[in-house]
Structures are given as C-alpha cells and as structure tokens.
Length: 309
Image 1 (tube, one colour):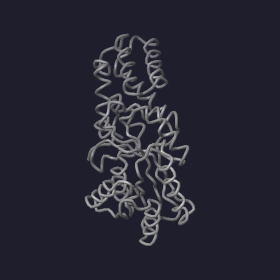
Image 2 (cartoon, rainbow, N blue to C red; image 1 turned 180 degrees about the horizontal axis):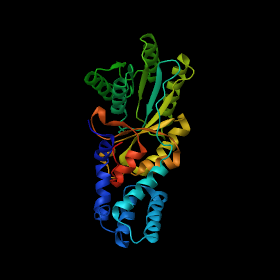
Image 3 (cartoon, rainbow, N blue to C red; image 1 turned 90 degrees about the vertical axis):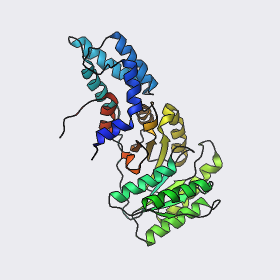
Image 4 (tube, rainbow, N blue to C red; image 1 turned 30 degrees about the vertical axis):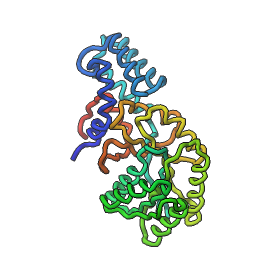
C-alpha cells in the first residue's frame, strides 16, 4: 500500500519539479550559495507561496548558514519544511459527524473547480471508512452536472437523489436529507451549482438550501466546504473570502494539485482565511482525495525523508 507521504509527493510532483528546476538540485548534498538561494526565492514565488512564507523560509535558511560552517541543501530543505509545518499549524480539518445523523455537508465552488467529482470521491471515502452516504444532485442548472454525479455514483456504487434539470435545488436538498433520515444514512453530501461569487441570484439559491435543510435539522448543514481549484493559486483567496462572507464556510477542499506547479497557494489560503483544509485532490481516482496533512505536504514539497515509525 502506497504511503501517504508518497501519495503527497506524487500529487505535488509538478510543484516539486518546478522548485527543483529553478534551484538546480539545491536540496541534494551540495552546499548552498547566493545563486541557489536566489533560485529558491524565485521558485517559491512562482509556486505561489507568497511574500510572507517565502521571506520566512529564506530568512531561516540564511540565519542557519551564517551560524555554521556552511549549510548543505538537505539541511536547507529540512528548514524549509519546518517553516511550512509551522505556518500550517492548525490547518488540518477533522471531519466530525453530527450528534444526530445524517451529517449534512454542502460543497460550494465555481464552475470547473472539480466540485461534482469531489462530491463523489468524498462519498466513496466516507463509505470506505464505514459510513453510509447519500449524494444530492443539487446542481440542477446543468443537466451535465446531474449526469456526471449519476455516472460517478454508478461507477462507485453510491446512492444519489436527483431530479430533472431546472428543478428547485433547495427542494432536491430537502428530499435528499429527508431520504437519508428515513433510510438511516450517516452522511448527505450536497453538490451545488457552480457559481461566481459575484452572482447574487446564485448566492440566494445557496441560502435557500441552507434554510430548507435546517427545517429538518436546525444544526444543518453541519459542514459547508468551498472546493478550490489548486491551479488558480493565490487568485482563489478573494473567491474564498466572498463565499465565506455570504454563506459562512467551515472549511476547504483544494483540488487538482497534481495538475499545477502552484501548490504553494495552500499556505496563503490558510494564512489569510484561517479556514481548515479538510481534503486535497492529488489525482484522478477516488483514492486520490486525501485528508490534508501539513506534515506530508511540507515534507513532499522539500523532498524531506522521515524515518519510519
């Protein structure tokens, strides 16, 4: 079975490769110098780690180099990983079930963020962990979204509640939660329509979904997660702020990290929003939706090896 660290390494391969190419193998055995540090700074900015995090990493590496008789790349990598772990302290979301099932999770995001695919992968993961799950196809604005969720449900043997295109999304959400209660399911995952955070009418639809599910359980929805396309980098921060203000997010899922060299945006998103990161998408398969681990993320980025426990 593939280790979680290896899974993170493979999923972040483009980010790691971009850093490595600009630093010319800095994290090998050779000693660091001004040129390699300049390359590292350029690489960290290109990967969207941002000014604050980049400055902290370079500052600590330079301080360590000044205090000793030179610093090898492997030592610099360990320092970089430690800075990332510190920056991400508290960022890992823990999925907690509701006191009275079903636990309702609403997934929100713009078109193209991978929301529908993520809904199916999340349902599969929760079932693998022993839960019973029901999917709600509440993106009724696009027939393709309903078909996509049904296709994933058939492929992964998952239950789904859906209606025809153009149906009231709030009504579908209500029916799904009601069905989950009667069938004694543990989880309901609501896939909502992709929307721009600037479109008021679609934001109103989200409010309606919240209102109707709360009629069945005043505590619902128990989780409201924004699905963020990791390839957008730091551009996703303003988007997340707007959704948080209008709907009250409880966390994030960052997708498509395997397809981008801008994986450093996770750090900026956490530092600015302080919204926990529950899962990250590291590949195409259902098993590639992994619980976010700050330690595995930091070690994967800098190629740090940890001794087996």
